[in-house]
Image (cartoon, rainbow, N blue to C red; front, side):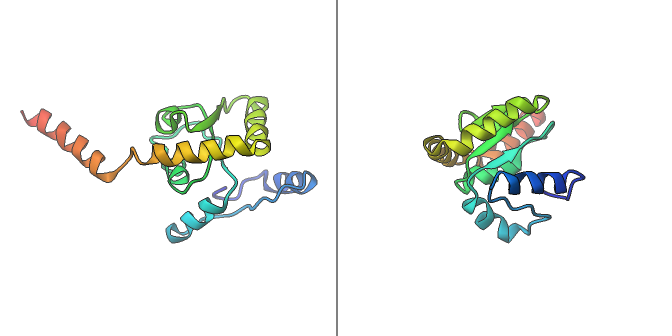
Length: 139
């Protein structure tokens, strides 16, 4: 969840009432992130704007299914490996979360698609593309 938000107590009470096993955390050290993501049922990423979407890519690389907003770079990064929602519509977000929560088959498919999708993003490919841009500018 990142930094503690003003709605944390209300969210904690709601997840307890719904009997959801939820962990609200603060900052996570990089070495601890893969274990945390690998053990999660899924990641909910309700971002309004992302420059690239590294958190969802990290989740996919760890085999963690993703439910994400459909804004900025998220559809491009996640492709067909995630469930999307409009972050301005709470009902849509709720429906996507419920769908992922209740459908084990969907989580398994999303997990597999995410692992495959994450393999498309490598440092080597990124460096090669940046080099191509530099070479075209210098030509």
